Amino acid sequence: MRRYRRRNTPAFTVLAYFTFFAGVALFCIGLYNADNLQLNEKGYYIAVMILVAVGAILTQKVTRDNAEDDEIIAEQERDQNISKKVD
Image 1 (tube, rainbow, N blue to C red):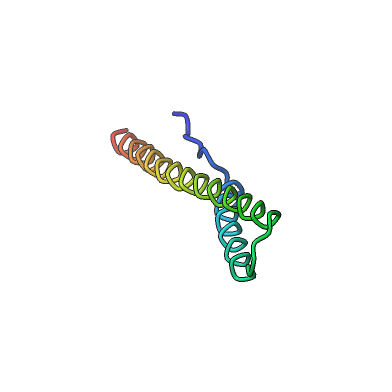
Image 2 (image 1 turned 90 degrees about the vertical axis):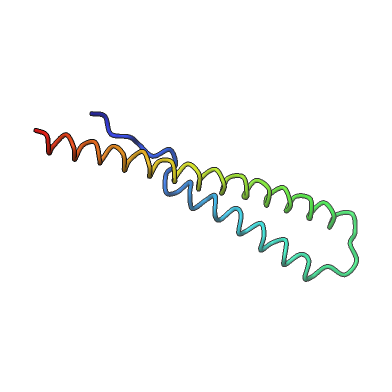
């Protein structure tokens, strides 16, 4: 029987979480330091919001994929245990 591989590596999972939290942290730092917004600062906020959106989407995808992979791997292990007991 072929063993199921996880779709996301641990490095990709860490990167997804890091992207989301880094974007949120950068946005909070920018808001804390914002007195009067100039045009270049508005561009900074737009870039950070895009980073937060991408981080949120990646984090959601990684979390969902990891949960599905855990279910599939658990099901395969159950099937292997049942087939070993029958033999």
